[in-house]
Amino acid sequence: MQEQTRITVDLDALLRDVEIIVPDGVEVEISGVRVRGDIESTVPPVTWGGWRFVVKVEGHAVLGDVEVRRPGQKAVHGRERRQLKA
Image (cartoon, rainbow, N blue to C red; front, side, top):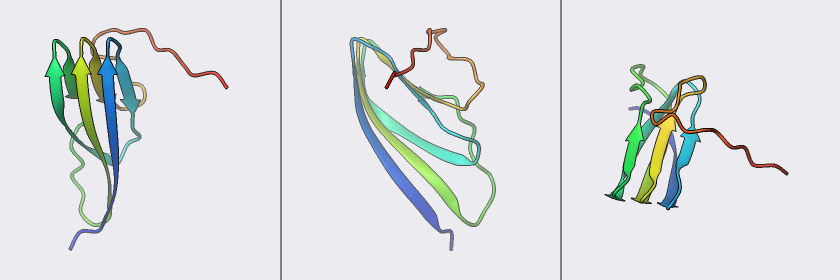
């Protein structure tokens, strides 16, 4: 039996792009509805057994994009990355 820890991220990309960066070893499940936008993951599947960590992304993209990727991977759409400031 495979043990897992699961986090669900529910988000909306309305007139903007949302980028989620996950570390190596994290499996990604992605689903959602898109209207003139994209919902995609460039994270390769995790192939080892035993314990696993899963991030489930449930997104809605309306004139925007939702992208899940690894650190160091280039953004698919070539977007400029903005960081939140405290």
